[in-house]
Amino acid sequence: MAEQKPFWEQLPPWPEGDFSVFGEVEETSLSRIQTLTASFMSRNWLTIPHVTHHDDVDTTALEQHRQSMAVKLSPLVFMVKALVDALVAFPRFNASLDGSGKKLILKKYFHIGIAIDTPNGLLVGVVRDCDKKDLAQLADDIAQLSAKARDKGLSMAEMSGGCMTISSLGGIGGTGFTPIINAPEVAILGITRSEWKPARGEGGELVWRHKTPFSLSYDHRVINGADAARFLRHLDAVLAKPELLAV
Image 1 (tube, rainbow, N blue to C red):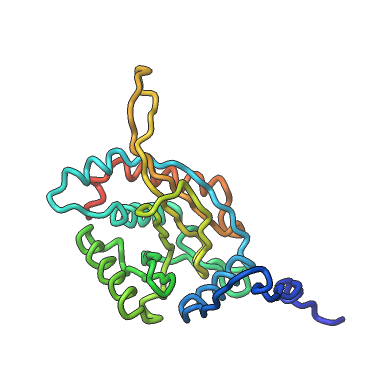
Image 2: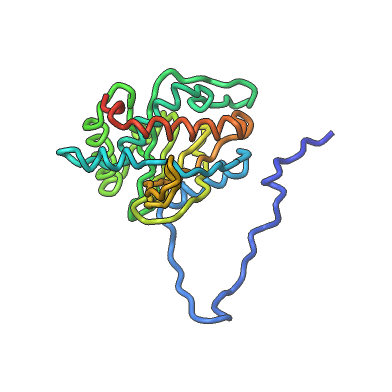
């Protein structure tokens, strides 16, 4: 019996055409980074059964804490520390499937990937040992990785070994999206723009809460929907006490 080809090799060819017959066009080449990213993203999207869970996380206490600090830190630094806490509580998120798809490798280290927008395309730099670093150290690591990614680019070593990736669009906008998992990781956390939103207080009064949309994409072969929902609720609870994330 002939071996069946993978389904992605059975797809119809990409539609070609002369777009100039419809109007003026301009042709430009993708950068090397964009080309590589496209190939990896296509592979990940086609081979991983993605599900994305969306939730609004209450970051009121975090925002108040940040504003009270002598040295202002980006919310992303706190998100990294909170994510480490969640990975400890939910070990299946800090894992990778082996090549056979039958064994789950649980990781005992905590390296967090940070998606970095560069002029030549998207890169993911990995911050090492986030559980052992304080907020200032993490902020410095993220700043150095981001600067190098935008200036010279990152080596494969600087983009390898991540446990889970954060893709933050909070500085631009949006209310949610579906980030593509950065294989061999099994989940990725997307963050979009925070907003002050009205809510009902304990006595029925109107109160304003600082809400941040979180979008958690996960590999459904490893993680189920209930655990994804609990994962984001755990992040909500951790970020409600930002002073505990200092170390």
